[in-house]
Image (cartoon, rainbow, N blue to C red; front, top):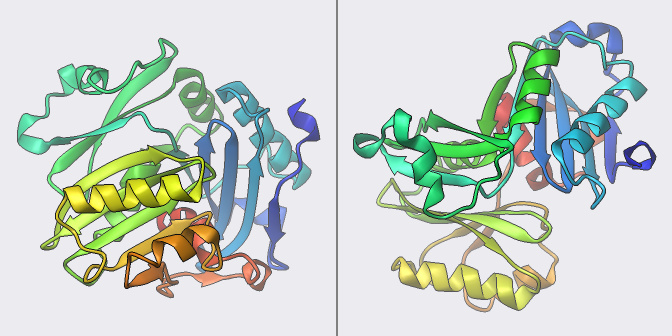
Length: 283
């Protein structure tokens, strides 16, 4: 059934050439129900393609991987060697452990406190670049194996690691950072220049969204009157969520292009926040 899926974003610049795949870097973001990938030309430092899928048919790692292969096949890329491949695991199965307390041999136990990890998942960890702690997360074993079989040098990381490492570079010492998906969002709080809080919240309505955001801010001693809230992900400034949050938060911002990478004109109609995580993974 995944063969019939159509992407809700499919933008390729005029610069794209399947014959040049060896100079392209690819970032793939996997989430149950969603798949997206971007291509960067490493010779020109230009982000030149973005393709995104969202469907309840993408119910397991096999569906996700098949959809990726079919999308690449359509562009003549499925059997290509890339300059590099980054696999972004986008799920809720993650926990942050302070470096002094981290024990790799016990890493699965850190997730057991909050989640019931499926038997078909593998637990791994990575040290954050921006804070003295480890991100312990779980990913589907079959997806990991398929990625490494197809592209042996694949770099696998968690979306939350990319999100946190990028937002911790925010120039101000205090801030709230929110990465939005269709029905959940990640939230990071930075205080006095340090990683202070991270969590993921599910929501169904704009009221749910605002409640979780404001409650977490209050519990962590952060005021919407003097702390900026910075949004990335699948959200536009003209939305009911932003209208509601704006009643309680004085300084609402959206992530901006830091001009580190060039972006193809083909992506000019796509809001930067939509592919912010891909952009950061390919920097």
